Image (cartoon, rainbow, N blue to C red; front, side, top):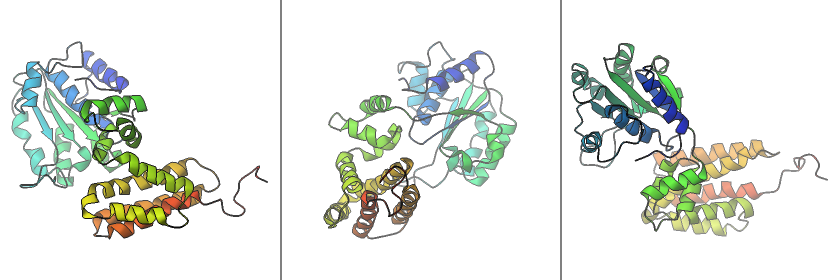
Length: 324
């Protein structure tokens, strides 16, 4: 398996390992869904296989088999656990999970020259767990490399950030995004629409698989460019997305509306302050709808109205320079 994009990050990591300057802790930072966790898994596989010439280790390699079976003795992945008898994950990575690493550190690597610990994501680590991890970062166990995935650097303890080497990951371009998605989604999916919705983060687009995201985006775009003077489209969307069966598409709509308004705000122009205010309100409503039992039809109707206001003409006196 190879990683699409992020060639600079791969080159920097490999060069550090081969020059014996491999830092004991790496902070993999960037937007969610761009491939940081995939990099961490591939980097762990590469290190555990002895850091050969190629970063892409064959799936037939012994290291790959052991990692796939979850039985490699020199590797540990920390992530949010699943709740009992549920596909829902817990809110955080706990201090107990971090403490369970200690037996691993009490021994030397058994099959590989190094041991690797991946934490996906370090942002999910509860405060007690962060303090426990800090002790390991301050006095790193011999031969241990930490790969810490972060979607939000600002949420991390400064003491953790200061003990890591930062490796930044940016968004993929459209062609790269499509390539990644073609690897993982069914051929019946509209990959072009998913890639457009991904905004450079293929992992984000996976939430939209099977939801006909193209039709949702088309409706949002129609609202943004043509408005909805008679509220016909708003009403249609509210009925379509407000049923219990439409819950996944409703959630996709909640995610897409603020992004479309943000796109309009980034375009600048004399109405940018109003568009920023619209974006803030759309985010507030979408977040509130996720946390509380708000009526879906009313929520869709209200959010659609915010998008439709993007099509309104500029306010009097705000036409901008050069307009007669």
